Length: 272
Image (cartoon, rainbow, N blue to C red; front, side, top):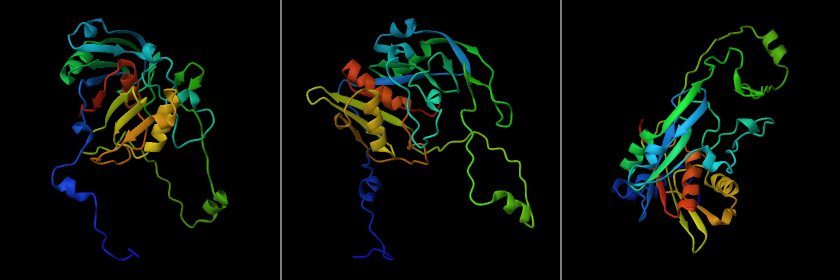
C-alpha cells in the first residue's frame, strides 16, 4: 500500500491531547535522589578550590561530588567529528582544573528532596581565578590549556576550482557577519533519570535523546559496562531543536550516581 499523496493518521496524538503524556518530569521511583548541578559563573578560569563542607552538613544531603570523585570517568567524545587532535578538547563530566564557559558543571549535589539539593548547591563555595577569554573569532587564539590553543583545528573544504569561480563571476559580494551565542529552547527543559537494578545488573536512563543508541554505547564505554546492560528509555519529548542530539555530562552523572549510591537519581534543568 502506498502512502504517497495520502493523509496518514498520526499514532502519537491521543495520549498527548488527553493530557496523558509522560515527560521526564513525570518519571519517578521510590527512594529517589535529586541531583543539582553547581555551575561555573566564569567564562574561563582556574579552579582554586571547591568547599562542600556546608552543603554536606545540610540534612537530607547524601553526597557532593567534584572532579576528584569522578577522575576515572573519561571525557565525552565528539559525536559528529573525526578530526584529528580534538581529544584534549572533549567535555569532562565535571570541570577539571579549569572552567571554560559560563554554566560548566563543577560539582553536583545529591539529596532526598529537590529543594534541599538546590539549597545545598548554593552552599558549595567555589574559588575560581579568572583567565583571559576570547570573545571574537577574528582575534588571535587564546590558551585552552597549557600546550593547546583555543583553535584546535582549521578545516577547509572546497569543490571544483573555487578561485576560477570567483575570478569569472560577474559580481562578488563580500559580507562581514557576526553570530552571537544561541541555542534551541524547547518548552521542555532537559532532564535525566537513572535507575539501577542490581538483581539484573541493568542500568536504565530515562529522558529525551535523538541519538539513544550512540548515547547508550558511550555511557556503557565510559562506565566500563557492556552496551546490553544499559537501556535508554525515551518517552514523549517537549521539543527538540537540536539540543536533544548530544550526550551531556548530566546524563553520565545520574547513571554513575545510580550505580554508586544504589538509589534512582533524577535531574531536571530549570530556566536559570
